[in-house]
Length: 186
Image 1 (tube, rainbow, N blue to C red):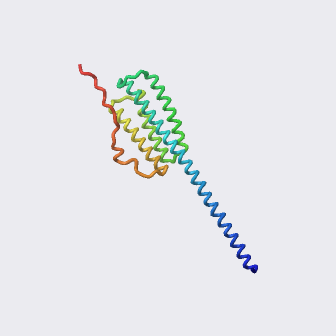
Image 2: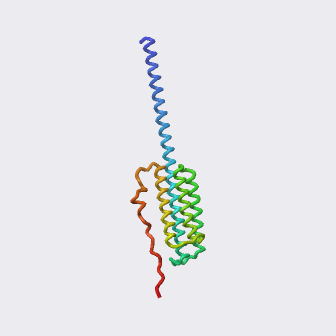
Image 3: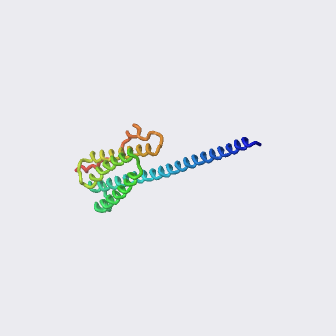
């Protein structure tokens, strides 16, 4: 084989080696990026789920406190204990909110802020910081659950979950609330 043929062979081997190296490097880089993206999505999902769980815990603690304060429910625990439970749940909700703030994109953060405002209105009414009729209390609860649905929708968008969660049919469903306790007629 002459020198020109040997140079062409060497050039072809070098080109093949460089192409293989470049292709492997690109594939490894894409795999690493996918792994990082997946890891962050998992952490976001955990943070979003924990936040909604803590918000719901606060709401349920608020409802229990409100019902005991208004004489709608009789339980062995007193208002002071129920307020302490609500304080604990609010602290846990605050910590969960901070995780959302660290990981979420702007739409989810805004939805979380709106949810915090709606939940605070429920907490204030439960504590007696604000007052109003039972129907207004129920509207506050409907508003906070609509805010939870809005947060769910923003979180789904951020995570790339397909489908429409916040449809008209879903939003039209009412909360299952017990009727107001009637005073016995003399």
